[in-house]
Length: 398
Length: 202
Image (cartoon, rainbow over all chains, first blue to last red; front, side):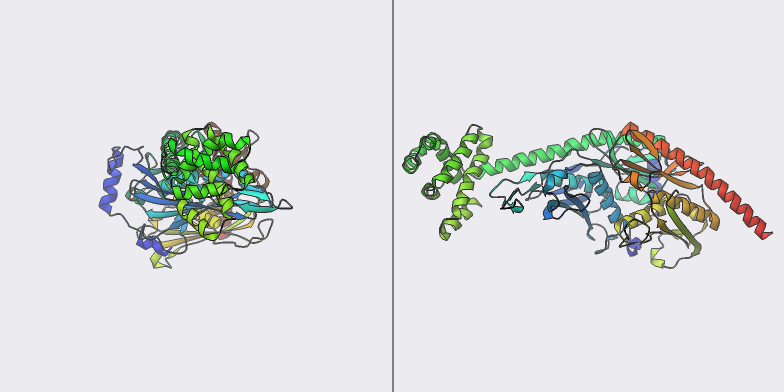
């Protein structure tokens, strides 16, 4: 614990000031006893990365997945591991390298809240029982320590897990044992199945355990007598509690804290859900926005070409939708012609047609799907196409 | 506690060995180390100390005992608590805290109150007291409570797995009662021990 002496120590004046203010129910930053600081959730460019700002505390969460062999006693469940990094830029007391006690405690509290309460469905992460499962890894980086790291890190982990998309994989091969992981460009990656969101709420005790505040700041944490972190979800289930010693409190105070925590948890759950929803909506919109809007009249030209190339009633019926979709997906006459040229293989065409037919009625929301579906025959053909044409398509897609 | 065997050793108050660790010169420094012997669990353990679970439990035990030791009576000194698990059958945390309390009392270190700890769980809609390893790994809830017996204050509270709030209240109440029963037993044992020491002194 060489870092202990670097930890900021409050002066006697500060300690007295904060404590006497708390005796009269006032907090130094103007909040009431049971108020959280301002919460801001932002997402990164990739799926599964989040940055949470709770007052002055900033934590970044990042989720990755990997195919591994499962544990021997749990052959059909995926795994979830939480790694914390207490970077020295967050607090001069943090040592680079080996995690200190508080880092390990934070990791274990969040781990207990997520894993033991079965927030993330592990069985859906199984690909081949006993051989391949998805192993989720959540990395939490503390960027700035403004107090109450556990709550902020928990929200970051939940936000990252909610927006994470894992690649789709299919089991195939001769013996049914071969696993092919699909590129996210080929097949849409899948979200995780999250049953509930366990929210951590930290309480700090002062005095003889009779003054309680929620979400302590850095200074309050340095002065507090004890703390308790309650992880509660929206249904009122207590997922985990951590009160690592410190000031003793009456059990009635603990039950009261749990009730307050469930109210706060509902509030924060709604905030997380709103942020995640707006992010996913924005991302879906971005997918469609990339493809420029098209004018329906242009269909005639590709229509003619399509009818020439295609054969069979099925194709003619769906030709209009296909070309319209192609219009959207390409929007570039050069590539469109190219795309038409690619409709040589009938097998691919009927495949894409049936796909498009099923999704054609879904309207604007389904456009991205259609574009995706149309893109899949593109990429399949790309495997057959000469190199220079393939390169052009790839640059187009990005 | 049942099949769980734990041994605790307390050294101190003695001079602070690592001046860098001494944060508050008006209070004693409490250090704690929790170790599990390699032979304590079913399969031989690879890393007896330094792994995350042991570090967390060391931190928890240290802070629990700190709440009870009158550290301001022994400034600039250090109290070391070493706890070793010889045989683990569930509830090792609680056994360690009880052992540490006994060791501290035997060492004559001034404390506010006796800290006792007990675990409780919830399986098949029944609250159970003092889970063993099989009951613990059954997947139900596991609540570990540490109380200051006479003052009726909860110092340590740890819970994992999901529990609705009212069920949790029941389980916590049961664990607190268990702690109080242990506290009575510990008090009796300490009295017997002190009487023996008195006899030996003559």
